[in-house]
Picture 1 (cartoon, one colour):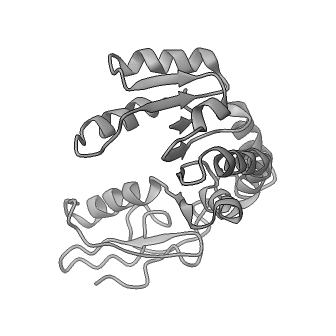
Picture 2 (cartoon, one colour):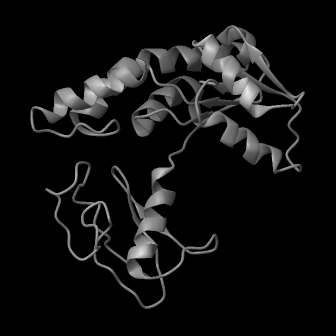
Length: 227
């Protein structure tokens, strides 16, 4: 089931699941506080009898095998407020790090923990996949309730690999080896003999590291090793 089922990415998730007939998916339940958006997304998904909507979190979670969480507490306006308040004071406003990420995390944590407790009560064997930002903070908090049955994911690494590969003059592929090292996260995507010295988060050309240029850049953003 998907918490945040009214999100614009939900049809993409459904499409990818539909492309994997080997996955034994018998039912996909969507739930969202915004019922109007939820029903619009259900219409966008189209004719799939396995997909249904639930009016409450408890109804959606009960008996689930997997719970996918992609919520935005406070909506888009909440994100705007978090990021602008930080940026006008000259500090990082991005939703995963810095003051902006901290504000978003503090607002999201109570809701995420309530979701985790609901899963523990109504679907104790379920795996929870967290796609809610700030992903690291939220995933770690949920682990206090659900233990190892929580997995945090993020789509930024794959995007970074594509951009870094383009800057290095090579074409990324599904088999391209990658190495990740993190306190936040940093990635290196080996590409033949090309050995750029910095990730695109620091420099659009990958030519030098300048942490002051990009919000979210840390000392670990620079690649330490390209195999």
